[in-house]
Length: 112
Picture 1 (cartoon, rainbow, N blue to C red):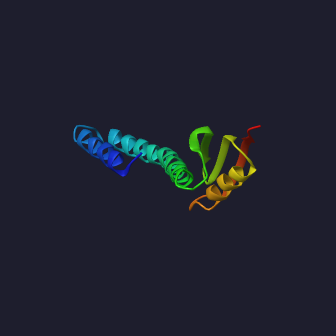
Picture 2 (picture 1 turned 45 degrees about the vertical axis):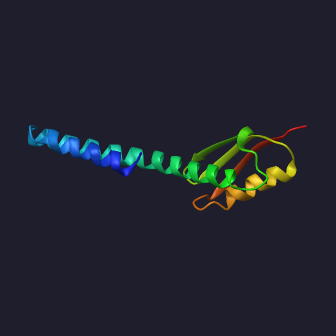
Picture 3 (picture 1 turned 90 degrees about the vertical axis):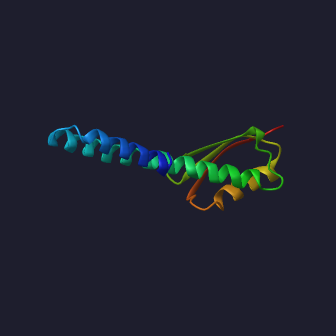
């Protein structure tokens, strides 16, 4: 989720606070903090997934049509089909070299 969306949500919350009791305001503050903690990892995973997909699509010799990318924290799982071992190596290497990736899980299948 973008910073802009979070800012709009926070602004809406502040406007809503104008008509709330102090307990409601505290509850809203706690809920907003929790939401921010829940959203941050999701946004980070989406950003890393986009970085990896962009890197792969810009790497010569990689066909993205059969690939699937999943991220969890700084671990990226690549799955799908590649045409040969050379393309598998390119996909794994390009993924591993992407800034923000700590671990690459290879679930790629070489087409026969």
